[in-house]
Structure formats: structure tokens, C-alpha cells
Amino acid sequence: MKNTAENRTALEAIIDTARQKDTGYEIQLAVYGDYLTLRIRTAKDTDYAAYPDIYFSDDSYGEETVSFEIATTGYGDHSLKQAQRAVKGLETAIGLVEAMLTTASLYGLPTRQ
Image (cartoon, rainbow, N blue to C red; front, top):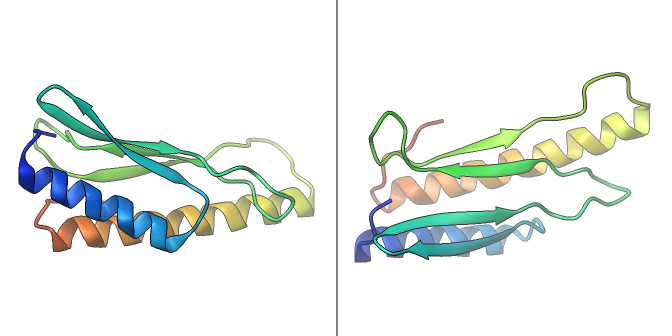
């Protein structure tokens, strides 16, 4: 995403939204010259939840369109407890992504779900 004042303000608002959700995910603004992006660190797994990775993307088909992808993992058989942890982690990630997309839209960034 181009390093403009408007884009920086929007990405900082997305970070603030994520902090308010208090999910354990860490989100940082990364600046690479004329380019801005978000780095998302996965929350630490607990006995309660196994958290999937979330990836930020801002270049869908050559357009500056904000999107987030949730990496689902864990193929094969799981115990009931493992499945419950995975579901809780996915629910947390989905709620966070929905909130960040809403914030991006409020700041005028085009989004893709």
C-alpha cells in the first residue's frame, strides 16, 4: 500500500481496533520506503484456544484492496479438545478480521472479504 498520510492513518486505526479487541494478536505497521503493510503476529496458543495465522494483503489484482486471510491448518483426526481449541481460535480470528475490515471501510479503503 502506498505510503500516504491517509493510508497510514487508516492502517493505524486498524491497529487500534485490533488492540481494543484484545485477542492476543500483535499487529504492527511496517514501512518499506514508499510502501506500508501490516505485520500480524499470531496469538500464543493456550489450553483454551489454538490460534490460526492471519495474513494482511493489500494488492488484489493490482488494486490497493485491503483483505485478510486466515490460515486454517490441522488436517487429519483431532480429539474433541483439539477440535474445540481450533474452533475457538478460528472464532477469535474471524471476529478480529471482521473488525479490521470494518475499520478499513470506515477509513475509505476498499476491502475484499
